[in-house]
Image (cartoon, rainbow, N blue to C red; front, side, top):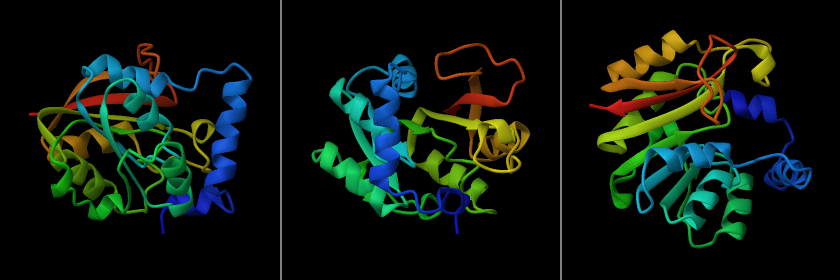
Length: 200
């Protein structure tokens, strides 16, 4: 079972979406992840939202001219995504068993929302390798996640940046940029990091 399933409890897609809708209504910027991706690859690029949840990132990118798809293990999250953007391909699936030959090869894969540390224990390296295989040569893997309990719905962080970088290196991915936020602030060694790795 994924750590997300444990952390989410009875949180379903509608309640999760309402939480973000309420934040947006209060004036909070909800599209930093999508805008960072848009800064990295041009419109028309193929983008996979890995662990897409209710589709917030993929939907914004789709509306701004990107060719997007989303995959998630939570059917209730995907139900919301399908209602909000029925023309985007939404797939129910496990990132540890990722197979995407029908969708081609992506220019960018984004794993936001603490996807990496909320995977099932022991599957992290497999997931990183699978996401790398979804990229075309020179494609980008962009992942943002917490590194301490302040930035995670967990008592402690199961993944370090050293772990993640080692998994990326094993998958042929080289670190290109690292930020402290999705707004592109320089990484300062704090409890949250956004890493951009490029497939060699």
